[in-house]
Image 1: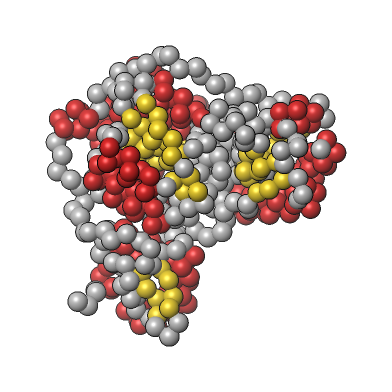
Image 2: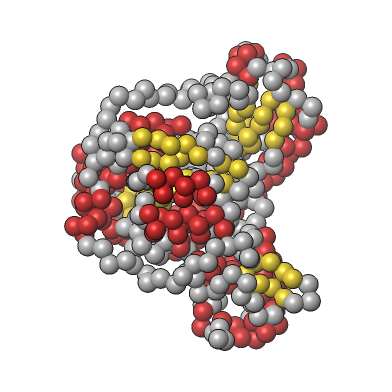
Length: 486
């Protein structure tokens, strides 16, 4: 059967998204939907360029991007084919016909308050290899201050009173468009709730989904705050291995065959803490398993915007057809940690339940901040800042990795991350991280002491070393202190 590529690949030449990225994303969506099957041959670049009425170089760039993300493979003398490692996915309807009552039955929960809460350290040193934080000196603070001043002075009195607990409708409308353009997520305002950061989103989602005794799967060395949230809500956690390709989905299926799983928590881009990215074939497999065994996927995409090797793979939420993926993120990493605007995108019934819970613990989000962010989305300030920040952080990643290898290559081991704001570094066992952390702190440098993940792996002597918040001079000073202490 001849595949109608011309009708399958749609794009907007007037969009701010580059044409080759639009074509790339359109092909990926057709793979995820099962329309383009494994081993399907794609048209030649010249043929597809003529079909789509675009320059051949645009199609070449799109194919290069697909190849870099492992969605396709090139066979010499034969052409470009959909990768053989991808699982076979059958085409499915857009939304499964599940009633609101069925969804509400899935969302009943009970809270458990017996877990110990870990409080992260307050970093006081000016030099810091932190967990992976942005450089607030780069943030568009002048634009932010100007907009805040405007709304505080001139906003309609109704808009600075009690507003919708789900979030500003104007912001959610603009943000839904932004999610569609940048992540391929088909959301509307009713599918979005704003929060005070991603951690609040994780908590609200957990409250809406988990009952005491439910099983939740997390990766080994997972984001500890998320683990504590699920434990505090009474969930039983099962830890599974994470390798260079991300969560091992075969292990997930083995568990599901013998036990009812309610939720899986993942950081699909730049896994926290080890920074690996979940590969395309495992993304598709995980979505297929969610549909088969009916578990929720809580996708924490905390720094999707910062990917340096190539365009980031689209989130799982972009391919979700049945409402099993709950997508969480925030602007804290993109602008500044104190900029407390986060979001959750999910099935309408989940958002309704989360809004009820949010109404109890926090009446509403910061409406003025949402107005400012809406303006920054609409006038392009946010996009201009993000473009500048990605370039700066990539340079800092490259510089930090280079001087760490030069100064301490025989004492540490790490892989250069494809994205994010931190490097996962393993130290030689002859260098106990806890004592090293105490030593460098006295010299004005913060370094994590490695104890966060000791409970899960007592032999581990590793930590995350954030590179984004220091410029090159500061990084040189920090590495000099570290080397001298070692």
